[in-house]
Length: 86
Image (cartoon, rainbow, N blue to C red):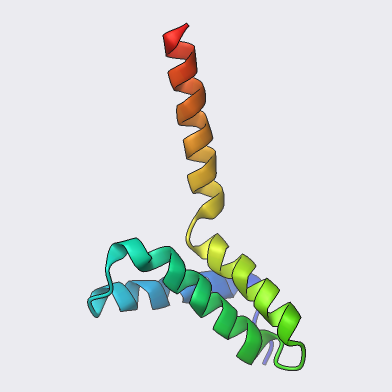
């Protein structure tokens, strides 16, 4: 069975939500997502190539934690605050 990368992200999000439900602090959500992504990458997606597993796992974990949208929102807020000062 081959697992598509787009399916792994919701799985990682579910793992993070489960960890938060079990008492993990919300501030560690991104760290849990990256760790879960790395573990999935190493042990499931690329068990024969650890380096690729780590890299792909980090990418998937960061994707699950919303790095892209968080960065985008931050940049928009900075731009808006600069516009309002002018």
